[in-house]
Amino acid sequence: MLGVVYWQTAQSKPGTIPTSADTAIKVATSGGTVLGQVGFGMLADIVGRKRMYGLELILIIFATLAQSLSAASPGMSIVGLIIFWRVLMGIGIGGDYPLSSIITSEFATTKWRGAMMGAVFAMQGIGQLAAALIALIVTAGFKESLLTASSASACDGVCQVAVDKMWRVIIGFGAVPGCIALYYRLTIPETPRYTFDVARDVEKAGEDTKAYVQGKAEGHPDEVCRVRAIAEAEGRIETPKASFRDFVAHYKQWKYGKVLLGTAGSWFFLDVAFYGLGLNNSIILSAIGYSKGDSMYEIFRRTAVGNLILVCAGAIPGYWVTVFTVDIIGRKTIQLMGFAVLTIIFVVIGFAYDKLLQHNGALLGLYILAQFFFNF
Image 1 (cartoon, one colour):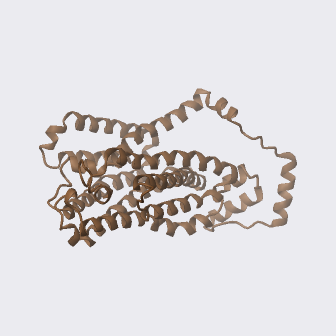
Image 2 (cartoon, rainbow, N blue to C red):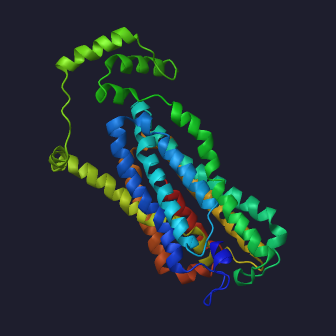
Image 3 (tube, rainbow, N blue to C red):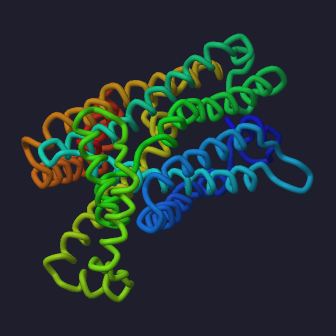
């Protein structure tokens, strides 16, 4: 869409965003995510989960709305503006990863911890579904304008104005769920585990645990007893501050290091394919011939429908099958199975790509399977 709006008069491939700009915009979010994961993760251990949870969502909302309102000027290109705001949005998204997972795990029972963690990440699938639906609705809303152009290079006048409005609406709607969730983020109680282990507030942690079991949001201990307990604890409970040297010494031991390496490494290798493909779904749908059409309306509609198919047939079932089976089958078994099946699928797609294109739906079917096992 940005290509139609800002590169309509380009000498080469008019109506198409340059590959360098497209890649930079996509990578910006991932770069910010790395900063957010490290930064918010450290702050959550220092000042508490509750104080950080919500701040990262405010950053996401602000950066999302700022993107939707961005426009080029003589002194600043649209690519530079969007990269700036997407880096900030990425920092917020990066903060959401460790905070959401650690808060869920610290509140969850051992029996259902896997399912609860899986349910948190399964919301990504619901978000992808909502985004595809918004794209489809917006496309239908501007149907008459989009029908005036047969291709991206011919989309000018009312078609170009319509596309400019469309990308802003689609991005701007991304802030709506965040605004709804913000109240709950800001009012969520501190996890009892942090209160007990880090803050050393035994009375408060005990009351919070009792309240959680009873279905209440937060416990309210007697403040006199609480202050007395904290004062007594200060004299006999010394909490040594962990340093980077302690971190290195701990994970230099192979029995701990292999767990960190295996977890981080498997996540890294999965994300190379997950985000490499996920950020380019529209390109992949076009490559396999699914998003072609004789008008811009048909192109955008088929792309939105293709994304809906991928999400509904692949991603969402994969997420929720994990939720219902992770505590039964086991984490390691699911990991090994997922990597094995994905390897087979990508080998088949890679070596039989041309032949698969000759069979209607074969390549799309394999790609849907890949989406399923990405999340299972």
